[in-house]
Length: 517
Image 1 (cartoon, rainbow, N blue to C red):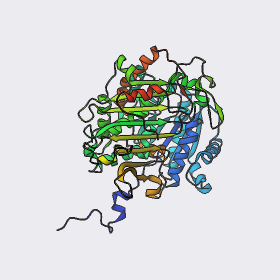
Image 2: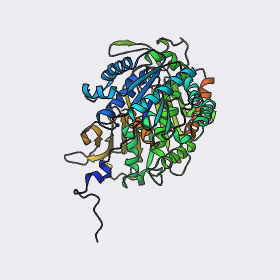
Image 3: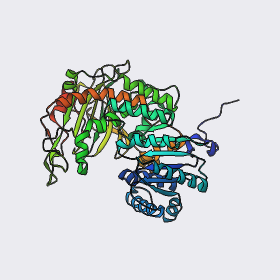
Image 4: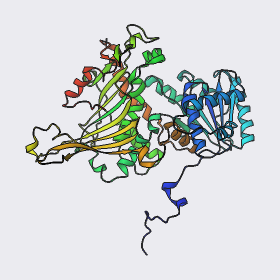
């Protein structure tokens, strides 16, 4: 008997895994920091989109908390206004909102006050009984990091971390500590209240479609995986550029900097996803094991290596489009001699057999020419060029490059050489492009939609584990220590440029140059 054709068109669509849409059980999302920007700009719009696409059960509920006194109706009205304002790419359905809003509730109180958790317990019982949420609770810490331990402590003291028959999970926003020691302290404390399997450290970069698609691209296609190693890859560039400055976050950024804010968490996780070994199965722990192994394989740089392989930058004033733009030191809340990095570039090396000798260039910065996040993989040149008659053509020996665009236009581009039409044999670079928006004819879910649904479903694949957090701090902390001891000559790049000249020189020493997106 012949085997069934998996690509047959007459398969039952309800049994086709490619058509499967994940459904989650009823639950209550307890949202600490419900009056903050993250909730209003990202979380509630993401939940509404999930409801709009019928990805949430009708009896799903949210209990918001902040210090501000509000009734349930006041909270619903505020979320209505913010969701309409920040809903970027989905229609707003008034009737659906009314249905969705019936599941929004609110409890005011101070996060350090045990009375809040008594009131919260009563509210949870009330909502669970009314909406039949199955005793499932997902706690989301959208608060200042200084409140993480007090909230977790109170959840444990009040018994809210223990369910009668439903689950108890907690989602923690970054940063996960300000250095290795504070990360260890936070992780060790969390473990006394919640088991690691119920802790979801969220990194929204991992929820972006293109980052997820790295898994499919590498491990679902036999054509690319054989090339994904030091024999064929010359180097890798990971760029996360922002065109805006620090705005009203000057005081915050002065104490954090670009390396802490972006590379220690987001970009090292992206790098780990690009460079990890294939897991035996596509299951949360198996995938995260491989990402963790990769992070542990990143070379810890010595002080001399840090001075050679890292660059700290800070933007200065300039004119962009005819308008005057402030330098970082002129921004509100920033000291006139601030030493904070608004730009960071690091050459990382992965000390394993797959990647030995291949540099990974990672950069991020404020006030760069454009907003873009991408992964660029440059392959080695052909070992022998037969087109000797095209020696004067600057494109004749341009190496192949694979570009994975994470934002703003999510997609993948493969650059290679082709013969230019006409007489002779002149080569020109061309691209094969894949774009999510045009290829699938559907909107791309936001990162928070994906990650919130994963947490409700108990899927931690795209979340960061304790050992991964600690491994990334071990990589970054020596760099921060050297930078802390260094008196930087800031500002060292003008707003609207691609960063300090020393970042270009860092790559030039390896015979490379930054790609201009």
